[in-house]
Image (cartoon, rainbow, N blue to C red; front, side):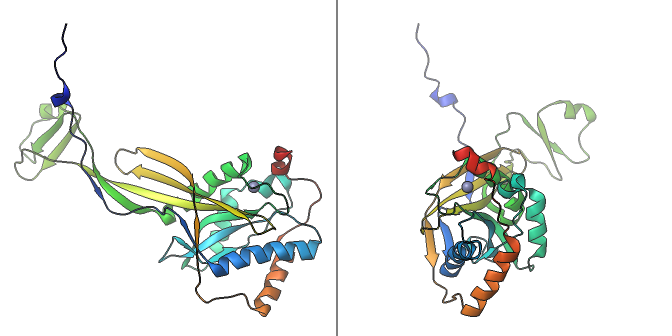
Length: 266
Ligand SMILES: [Zn+2]
């Protein structure tokens, strides 16, 4: 028995037109990087011990891909909440920000531990942060054709109810047409995750979500990424470092019991 060549029956690839891209690497100002490591240093100096802390990476709304600052929320004493970021906590922090700043990710420290990976708890936090920031970092990535098997074209005021029984989708137009393509917008959102250590190391990932606005088709992926540091000339002044020390003292609570993440690593 011979099979006929079926290649001619293959449906053509849906038409896709690229409109934009999600970041492939992380952009961060040198100022934001220096501030992150300064927070770790201040934590060590104030509490005379290295503690983990977390903060948010911030960007200007006109350039959501560039981390320009680090926002330090109240870090909880409550151990469960300390490493598990809740969307309520993120929402409160976003509301406290000026309107031209947005959260584009989160950053945390593993203190003086040489644990240079994201833990299971961290992975859950990525999802929470992405859920929260997705609407603000959202941009159109492509227009993609939705392949419709049996599209029915009807003309306004010129069809009868039984015409609607046919087809999976029907398009009603104000004039006669014989062919139509439905193109949906694929929106993409991202958030950054950075983990740093007291010795100066950092590891980072980008988390991306793409969603078709009509089909609802959603893909999520995480990828390790490089950071490109951008020198904007802004630096940490001594008076700002003093201010930051006060902020650290106020927002980071020393606790003696290990948080769940630390237990997870043992
Ligand atoms: Zn961690």
